[in-house]
Image (tube, rainbow, N blue to C red; front, side, top):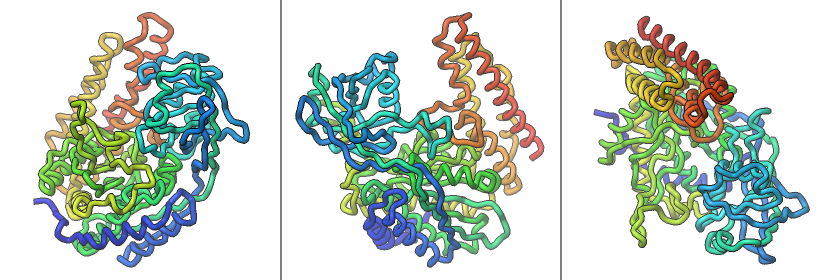
Length: 552
């Protein structure tokens, strides 16, 4: 039997706190956002938690205004965080529509002196390809409603390397209903003006903690961003209210806790590309690496028609428990999706196992043309996502209670269990399966025989252990620090990877390029040199995992 907290949840508490938090427009670093942080701080404190409200520097970007003219006519437009300001002089040029298929094939200089029109939301890949091709600016044709976006791949505040992952050209979005003609008409002259307030500023971060009655330094962590686009009732007010309610329920069972409990609220999620959680991971790396058992992250829960709970972010070692809880509380078969670079998932480099993010999604429907998809804007998190319509009227109380129960029950399973309920056998299998896929792609051009041999050894060793015994708790912390970064990062445990999509075991991504490189070429030799080094990293990590498993 799992720990089901459904009956302990008070929906009136959830709705009250969400309404209170969503009274403020919570732009990162703003006075209104700080009011929301003070509200959360008092709520945690009233429940008996010790709190720390910190302030740190972060690179924050807030869109101010934009103007777009095409063929002499003025159209509605929105500029975006982390895109460039034009200053007082508009950027002008011929508008050239680039299909999604052609974007990645653009050549340097192909769009020199032109404005690129692309389909969909303002994302880094589209903007980057256009910028590298010489475009003066990018016009994103979005389905109504136009959503706020952040087309940067710098995870959190930039360093000297990742500064290059922030667009150096203006980016705007326009309504498809008004601007679809840009796809078919040629020779149209466009004019863009943008103002984006991008600078270093102080933003808040809140930590609330309570200790178990038994002595331990290890803790379960529950995180969620507090900043928002507009009033953000669902993104992320419902989560913030759920944090308060789960903190309340957890405190009622404190005598039974086996581990400490930490809740963290970030700023800089929406306007700094996860700047708050990235700073927290950097600043508290040692503590997270040594003592954090699991991070439960939540983002945008409890929306109307958000009835699909099968596809939230999950790591292999947390999937089994998540599947069990979702099944018992909702009847749905949780499949999960692999760990991804979004939703304040800043802690894989620390070796911290993770579960969830956006838990409940919109259910896909059959369209008039027979295709299956979503409502306006292809928004899995609701048509209101990242718009001014993210308000209380789109909160569904029943869904809200359900989502809170799933997240809270998962957390309570960790807090109350004498053994850490992380199944690292699944992680070992995921590493082995990933190695096999990379080897298949590499063929006879590069060998992963030794890593595969070691993964077999590790799988056999782990399979011989009874991992539900408390004496294996310390081993779980040790092996997680090895396998989580191995499976989910490019290999540098002291920094976050870029905010782009990665495959599992991403240190071997060069195999993808190798498969398309001529044998004997300079490129092949360079790729194999890189892959040898990555293979050594994998071998070393697996040998250390074997050693710690042998020693218990």
